[in-house]
Image 1 (cartoon, rainbow, N blue to C red):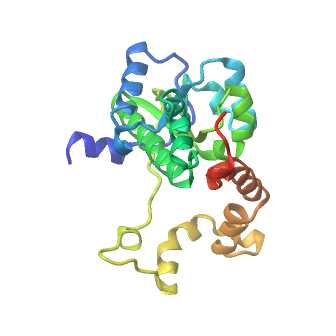
Image 2 (tube, rainbow, N blue to C red):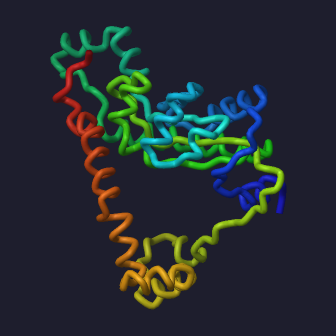
Amino acid sequence: MNETIHLIHNRMSLRRYCKRPLREEHVDAILEGAMRAPTAGNMMLYTILQVADASKKAALADACGHAFIGDAPLVLLFLADMQRWQDVYEAAGVPASCERSGHPFQTPDMGKLLLGCCDALLAAHTSVLVAESLGIGSCYVGDVMGLSGQHRSLFGLPPWAFPITMVCYGYYPEELQRSRTPRFARRFICCQDRYRRLSEAEQAEMLSDVEAKFADVLRKRGMNLGEMTYSHFSAGPAARALAAAAARQIEPWGNPRHHEPD
């Protein structure tokens, strides 16, 4: 196992940080590393927004329900971003040339949003690996997808920038005992040549360790693991709120010809 593989296997989600600020050269390395991530057509369809203002970090912590966001020495918001290219198109006179040719000017569509999300997430995880190599822990916060309406005001986000994830970073506390969260066995996750659905017996085997871990909770709630996961992840109040908020935010991307450029 080489150093890079060891780093990937040893990483954990860190939600408690050493209080000292990150060294400037380490922040630079994280940002520069993120920008070396693979990107569609080398277009860099993302923006990295560094949240340094304490009041804004506190607002994020309150909105997402995670106090550690306010304590993190570095907080980066990763945006799927087509606004930059829309601005380039307008500066280059593309809307006018479309009008002359009789074709409607195309605003960003769902395909561009998905490409931007891929770009942003690749940049985010590359930054996480760079941070880990420097002894800096990190934690993803996916709740930002459902809060993008609030973020538009808080960060002055333009129409075609969508917050896909946020990452908090900080040095590992010296006394911290690392522990790795287990993953499902590879045979349940990786397929070859063709998608393979799991049998009920395979599902039970895959989930057995998780069910054992939450046995007391499941017993008290009178649920099995599938029912509890569904009630929390797919159909609970938080899940419904996330789905509704995300739907509102991505609606313009799903109707690209119905939205004129600013």
